[in-house]
Amino acid sequence: MNAAASGGLVMIPVGAKVRVRNAWPERHAPMHIRTPHYLRGREGTVARHLGTFPNPEAIAFGRPGEPRDLYHVVFDQPAVWNEGEAGDTLMVELFAHWLEEA
Image (cartoon, rainbow, N blue to C red; front, side):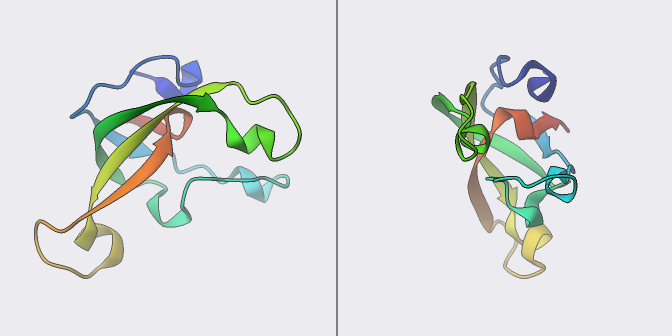
């Protein structure tokens, strides 16, 4: 799987281990980023494919939004927030172009 390179055209299977790209494009130009900063570089598990939607990062600047797959990805909460009990999780919607194999 290389969803980032393919623009999200490769379906990521439920249960796949993924890593949120540790990219910071907003440092180079104005951006509308839908991926939380606190998840960049973190590993999670794909829980569900939510569908294919126009890329909001392009639409925000009046550009055509190419289709991107959107997923529910589950993260271990204590690893993200440094608090919580074992088994606590955090579920976030992330577009495929922000995900890579873990």
